[in-house]
Length: 299
Image 1: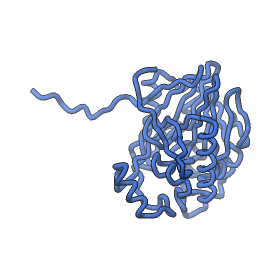
Image 2: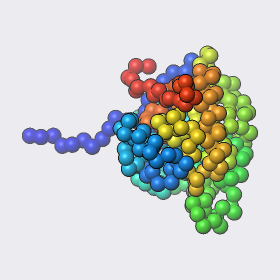
Image 3: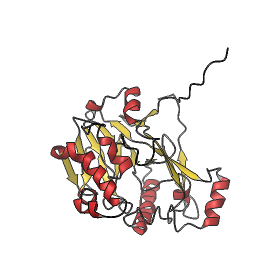
Image 4: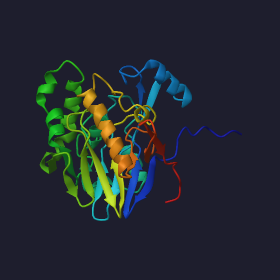
């Protein structure tokens, strides 16, 4: 007698150490993103070459969605909150709650949610399906510039993506307004937690650098979307329509890559293949390579 197909995968959580800190990548799912509109200043022949050389899907980019929980022993931080119950970008996301549970983390234990930016696949997971706070005891941290861009009610009058994105963001942040902490890129927020400006994809996007016992890791938001294209071609814009300032976004990408290599900072790509953690090398020609760490059951 044959057994039925399971049609399930291992729970999507992965732990790694940073000095005394314990970090847990908690997979929220993935975006099946077409190539339409992406990397508009890329050379088509070069993109085709890279697809073939690295055996990439030819018709879409599977962008994983990788929020991270960092336990510093005195606080539990969540960096970005995933897509939540929304199906705006498809039905392949919204796995954060079940994978938090599988990782042994309860939503009420989260003390601080750090937002790299407020785009839907980062902010909509702040709320439950009924609109209540998914992390009821957490303070919400966001740059003032980012808050100004994506909670501006004037966006609701736009005839493009800004209207629905802003509407969803306003609903997502509503339960946290009394616990909102705005800051400027470059500020140090907590001992061992600093920020680095990577605006361009959005007006106030920021990366978070955690440091413990001389080790550093940076959680980068959407400064880079692809583990091959972006390191090899940091000059490629992500999207002319979605990026607030595409050229500025490409410049921020190059600046962060240089900082990561120069200061020996581990790199976490929010949309890189799960779990998204690794390091960057700089080649002789000035381009970069992302070396993803293989998931291991050892801690």
